[in-house]
Amino acid sequence: MSRPTTASRTQSRGSPPRGTRKSGRWQHWTRRAIVVLLIVLLPLPVSHLLIFRFVPVPITPEIVLKLLTFQPVHQRWVPFAAISPNLARAVLASEDENFCRHHGFDWKSIDDALKSHKRHPHKPLRGASTISQQTARTLFLLPVRSWVRKGLEAYLTVLVEALWPKKRILTAYLDLVDWGHGNYGAEAAAEAYFHRSASNLSPDQAARLAAILPNPDEWRAAHPGPYVETRSGKLVSRSEDVTRDGLDKCVR
Image 1 (cartoon, one colour):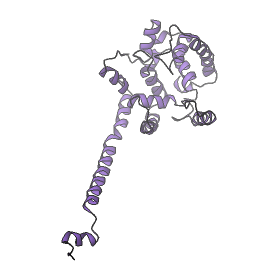
Image 2: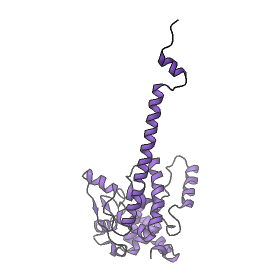
Image 3: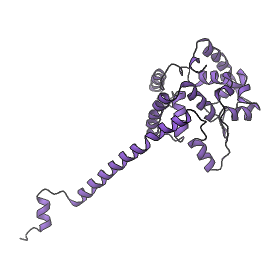
Image 4: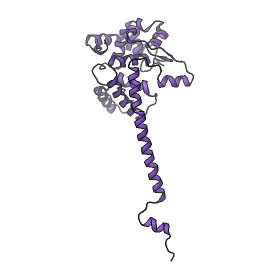
């Protein structure tokens, strides 16, 4: 019978196989790389938000993507005072009536959306994103759906709410949101669809812009179809409720 080799005797004394040692080293360095990336990258959004709390946001990841793929982009940042209050109220009525009451997440809307999905599982899950969540997403993330993106969005939403006042959040939303056909922000949308500045939008025009936000490339603000016409009419009424009930008090 042949005698065991030195390597075999060493392994039998408890040393892990070579493949296992290599795998362990790889996992060790992977963990270290992830920790280093987190240490380096996590503070970046904080510095970004602290800077752009006071100066206009020049560009977003989605706009960069459009430019890199040679698609037309029209966007111009204007201060909150240069955007019609009609638009601010219409957007609050359409997208987030509880904007002034929550701290980034509207848990009741989330719960209602989950209950609705449970009753109708074959229908797509109804969105319950707040303006704060949408602003965080616009500032930092590409429009790609994934669970990783949702996790990052939650973290970034907490930062946005902690570092920016509500008026700044709404200003960034109105100045950067996609209003369809390469028009980003209220000023670009008002000029493209109504040939006027965002400061001069009427209640009806503002309601039309708010009405098309869920699908701005398909729905028309300037020449609305039956759905947008009906929805914008409701938003005009709900905008009045926003003022009456003080739902816009944090941005007045």
